[in-house]
Amino acid sequence: MTTSTKTIERPDIREDISTDDDTPKFFHYVKKDQIVESAVSGKMVVALCGETFPVTKQAKPGSPVCPDCERVYRSLRKK
Image 1 (cartoon, helix red, strand yellow):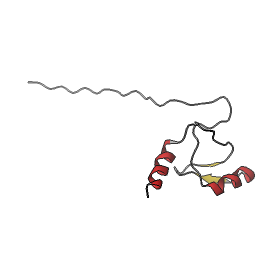
Image 2 (cartoon, rainbow, N blue to C red; image 1 turned 60 degrees about the vertical axis):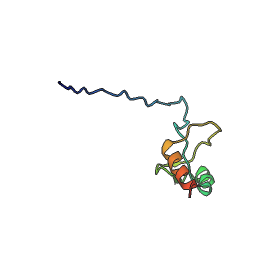
Image 3 (cartoon, one colour; image 1 turned 120 degrees about the horizontal axis):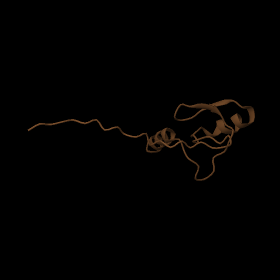
Image 4 (cartoon, rainbow, N blue to C red; image 1 turned 120 degrees about the vertical axis):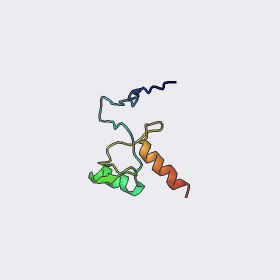
């Protein structure tokens, strides 16, 4: 009885959600008190996933959410 092993390549299935304007790929979870300050002053904020950026757009219902932020947020809500 012979056994052979094959390596199967898994395709990269991540979708590139690029947009024509300056809308971000994902919206992140940020502390509420930092959102307005950043929008007015341009000060950088730190999202739950660790990404830093200035707030320039507001998420609308149904907007894509950063999967890492979502994971952290859900783990915080259970406590």
